[in-house]
Amino acid sequence: MNSLDHLKTALLISAFALLAACGQEPAAEPAAEPATKTEAAAEAKPEAKPEAKPEAAAEAKTEAEAKPLVVYSGRGATLVDPLFEIFTKESGVQVDVRYEKSTQTLANRIATEGAQTKADVFFAQDSGWLGALAKAGHLAELPQAILDKVPAHHRDSGGKWVGTSGRARVLVYSPDRVKAEDLPKSLADLPKAAKKGRIGWAPGNGSLQAHVSALRHVWGEEKTRAWLSEMKAAEPKVYPKNSPQVKAVSNGEIDMGWVNHYYLHKLRAANPELKAANYSFSTAGDAGNLMMLSGAALVAHSKNKEAAQKLVDFLLSKTAQAYFANTTYEYPTVAGVALHKDVPPIDDKMVRADQAHLTDLSGTLKALRELGLQ
Image 1 (cartoon, rainbow, N blue to C red):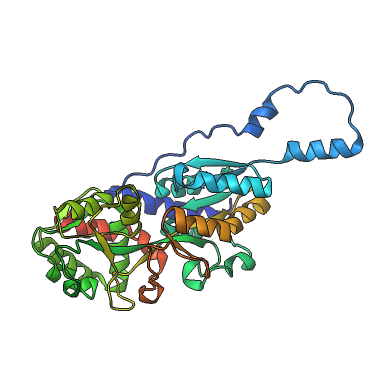
Image 2 (image 1 turned 180 degrees about the vertical axis):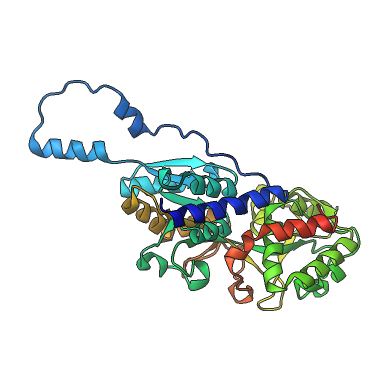
């Protein structure tokens, strides 16, 4: 690693340390990685075998040298394991997935490991961390043929990552207690539209913090702080995350909450009697209509770049995109893939915020803390 690489890595790690100091869950030190099946086999003493024919020997050598593709995944095993299984079946490439709940922790691990990383692909729950690694030089540029599969607002302008699926920020509300005409047209109007004590939010949750981080860039610091103060005055009920807000709307605890869209659909699949609905702000390009992307990238120091490119390309295939749409109720990033029947098209309403702004969390955590919201 040259001096510039060391500087970039130091800057990225310093940024993560700042987030931790401001209250974000601290990133874990790189854990000792378990040996892959291939590594374990290499340590075992091979048994003597009959001399093989040249063609058979060549095939055996190819298999012996083939390394499993190592993926650092911030997306959960229950969600993406079926996709990896399909990929292996179609491509013949074995996948060794290292799961971690925190995308930030994985990003920190890649930055810390540097050239010694075993990661070939970084599969992130939140694209902002992809942007952070790209700026620090830890991601390789993807082939243009892969980048061109998604529109410009679903990929890195420098070609270092692509969005694989999206989650929209919405209001979840009670159609029984809130009239459609009384719903705010803009996120800016939400504090005035909410009755005191009848709205929920989760200021300690990463999704809300990421959205506020985007607001600070779209609206500016002053307007964002003023809006947060107005929300505080509405006496919102605090929840640990998104799904409890959806349940609270349904059972009458609150009238509306500020969440990611897919929680409603997941909970309704388990309980068809759920009494709640999603709402996207009616003003086109409103700052409340933010798409939060999951994405994938090729790690710069990958030792298996060809297979890594195949996996990223697969995640943009119709098979994978249809999986995201129908199994997890997310928004596909590739055009022409049908949404789940219960998920409305909203692309014309979305604000086009730079995904990198979603990781500008230090100022967000500081504002929440100073306003007494943390």
